[in-house]
Length: 316
Ligand code: ASP
Image (cartoon, rainbow, N blue to C red; front, side, top):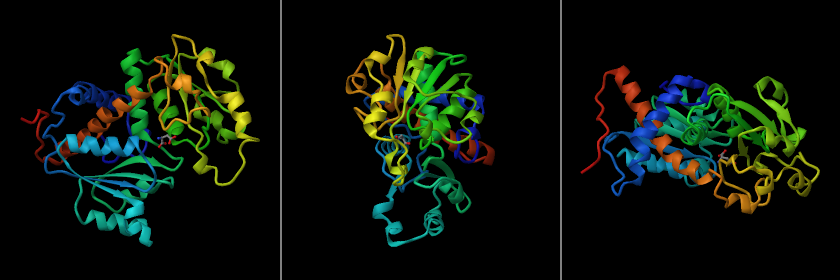
């Protein structure tokens, strides 16, 4: 794997496949054991730097590093010197002085992880930058789909909802297409980016088109990025046209959502609790995939640098 993981475009299809094989063979099953720890990254240091709210991504990156036996430090912006006005550059220069191996960064501004990568020797993993990208979400979604469907070539997916403000959509459109899937976007015109045609996806504005796909990928309304603008006449109207319920989903279709879900906005509560959805499977996949990403970043780059890395073997 490349030095940093900033965008899903940093990875070839072969690299994605190879990371996901590592996740499946080495790490998925590990989480189901009583002892969930391997000594693989003992002595390595990972700093998780979250400037934005997170539950799944921050928990799974922290657990991933700990289960690999790395020293994991979590820095939350509201409890760090960032809250005292420290600049991003000074924060990264400071943390870099501790010589971490990996910096995992979530930030509300597009490009912040790439900016930080200029000032650290650590490998930088983008854990979500504004409406930019969320490459590890994309990897875990591809992983979940492979677990269910096997090969993904020709699989048809509809991504539904607030595509304009979604970093998950941006990474997943590119990642799903890279894996040979056919992508359709379903959203009101105001929640689609300008130049959407250039993304290589079919575009429509009605849930009727859900019948044309195998997989339904729902997105949260990203209110925090609407910045006071009215993208919709009203939330109630959006819900009446775009909230997906059980009646929209055939038994053979699978439903994904990156979380957090907003019940009654993009997904009806009954569908959120239904057996056919893959939401918790995605959460479980997130841990195995993030372990694989941390592991592969260290071992692939250590192999290039000629330094020693332990093999994967259970502790004790
Ligand atoms: N958890 C995802 C993200 O951080 C999706 C969301 O927040 O709606 O982008």
